[in-house]
Length: 454
Image (cartoon, rainbow, N blue to C red):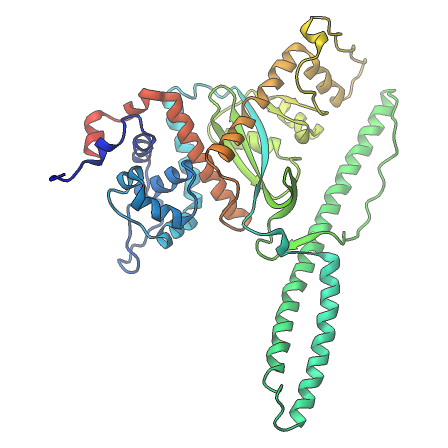
């Protein structure tokens, strides 16, 4: 190797990094925040930093220190950085300060997909959510009941320490005279944090009670309308919601906006990541993030985000966790045909279905309720076929993100920042998926001569 090697010869022509650089080069990076003062840490082109983050996320490297190390050890990353080695502080700062601009890059990828005919038409979107761990331990959380007890204990300790400090002031040469004020200040500081946690929990519980009150009111109205139609209504009437705080309601001191959620690994400190996937291309056309354990109220929001990104879906698929009469009616009024399960669906096909002996769906009542209409709609062959697209589109996308890209936990804290990181994850997935869809055509986004110059 007497002459300097050309790293372009070290990577195959269909490598993901070539496609990524071409897509980034077609985007205006003028809105990215960089240091214009000419002082401090060394600065790098925003297009290079964006490409570095997206490629490393797509290949399962999320830590800024791990990305910095990859700039020395990974040939593709060295090629992407043109021999430069951004330090982990620069990488972390760029990611933290440009989360909002990543949203525009997400839309830009979809525009490239539409122009290349990989995303021809967004006719049907499949919506689902997945629980991802927050950057906070569940052991850093405190329940409301325990917090109240700790506050009472700390108040007693502060009173006792204050009395001893006053006694020490009256005595000369006390050994604990200098330690008592520090202990009192430390306990008062802890009391302030716990009081803040108690106030936040109580505000959350009040908001939760208001939402539950509205839900029960809507349910009571629905039962009343069913009686007026002559239907038989069973079960107890919705009770009034009591304004009380659940003693088990928790607050996490590391990431207060995350929540305890039930996962297959037990209860974890998590966020609920949402995605709307186009069923033919399996590209994510909209994403969002919630700190609610359930998916209620997310369906319309995801369809609206899809429209905001420049697409007009005609169908929306979702599981039973998304069903809401008001949400389905809102979608239908806007021209979107909803296929939302109203009860848990069985897996596989029955023997009667395979043999063609399956009983037809029961006839509709003269004035069926919206829930009955949706159930009958999904029991038809067309309804089963359309709803069946859901589990073979959006669920594999989450599987690829978790198993192939190995993204299972957020690094950032706070719902707004975590939402930005989830958007970055979706950008990385879409780049991988789009490169796979286009194949050899991915190299035709720019002219060969321009690519050689780049």
